Image 1 (cartoon, rainbow, N blue to C red):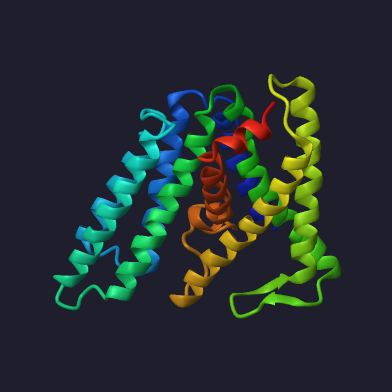
Image 2 (cartoon, helix red, strand yellow):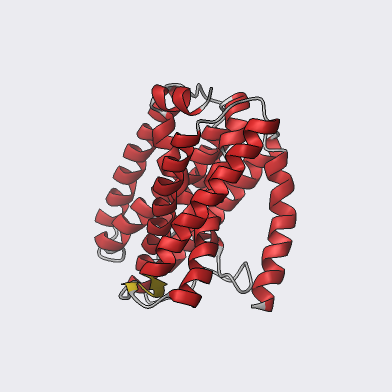
Length: 279
């Protein structure tokens, strides 16, 4: 526990200043770097890191695509660009598997393709949401709040009251009580966040929509965590990496972020959502 706390403190000391100055290019570079680490961990977990035709193009994509997020028209250009990337990358990975003479199993290739695109889209979503000028400067914090707060709330509530296992085959320690506690904790923090933003920010957030969003994103956060755990169990690995002592790898810490960011990314493509959320 002590090691986890120390690692978390150091990581936050680096990450929070970058969040505060998220309008600068250094934030884009940081997200692209973290995305590349996550993609590397995914490919290594699937035991395909020894194949340069899989590893190198995937890492290039993991750096390039997030870095372009705020440099392409946000309204329509970027979603179309992402769609093209998804189609071309999936066709490429399947083609490499097809011509590998059995060295790259199609199921592993498919899983790597899906998880890599999932990671890239999730990290791109952070920059995409942040790109909405004044609104984005406030809303993008929601991604991290809804990712890490439910996990914290679920842990403490689960330790104290947890009796019924949620999905033991995927994550033995998670409980139904913990999941409910995580959602309630997220709702409370969202309300506090909304009060603060409405008091000192340049925008006004809709309380009802923020409460509804807190539930949706808290659930998405837990699903993201379970998805990452499912992949680890499939390949019989404990953690995606060791870069964060006591926490594992980048994917072990950002698994929930990818899910909440992706959901908020999709919602932001609906014009009425942003219009109703922000007054």
